[in-house]
Image (cartoon, rainbow over all chains, first blue to last red; front, side, top):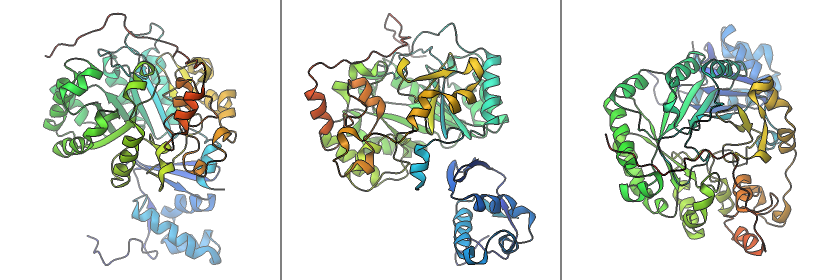
Length: 93
Length: 367
């Protein structure tokens, strides 16, 4: 059970794309649809899309970001992943 | 470029695909968008419909909005929706509820990825049945009761906003709460048989302003992006707030014809047919869709400071009231649409082709 004080997204943990989410590539990035919550979410870049797609193959979200994202952009990607965690598009594994 | 601008250029596949399964209907609602009633003998066969679902899955279209006519009238209705769900295509279907008896309710409750929208256009039999036909209020409520008893979970009550129903918003909210249902409101459009009743039934300017405030305070009420023309009043309502026709939205009709949106079943907005080279070919290559993805022409709205908020409103509403597509929406919140309508010396309102209305009005009997 998650405590209210805990942050939604802990990047030191292993994450993955939620099983109930379909991801569709688009020119601007991708559309993600959660079949459980029926929510449609926009991934606003292709880099974010490949990061999200590959999350499940890395030992932690930190490791995934280190390998795929420029250090200078890390903060904005962490913010994006936090929003996706909140929408249940990605989840801990 | 904002996401909204990108959507205006179209997507690899639609976000919101509506598929009317049949023109056959056991009701004869006065505002029917698709002038439904009689089955079209050219209707897609079961195998054609299954193949279409396979293509929809391959195109990664997340869900389909199924409608009609009354979709549950098709004998293969369950075969089709079960196939869709197996392919992980979400199904949202609109129904008048007449076919949701206790057995159907249990079968529906057992399925995943399924949303049901039951149409109800008045809070009581009096207001509802004047639009949807005698007995239709009772049958819709019976369907809701059956779904509740079968523990279906959260279904949707779908209400078209008319001059009468807009005065019943709080009661609809209470009815939805009673069933643990979601409330979904949509705009009355002058499409199909709606062209005959739109003038008398569409909400007044004052009602539209109240509706906007009501919706703004209730982001959980679903609208299917119906009311983006009202976003010109201030803060945008929930949704993409743009005309998605041919860009993120389209319609496949029962005979496989593809139209730019569910509200323009008319030759002028027909992009092709799925029987020719499949749906994907129509979506990506149709000349009509390509032209709809070009930047819009603000036309008469170019000097209005709110153009960015409403983008000139609904193409279908303009077309079927006899306005030009570069005119303001007939229900423009600043009254520019009414002025435009009044200034047309002769209003040539296009008739909606095709028409599957039954020639004799029907009464449904309570079971």
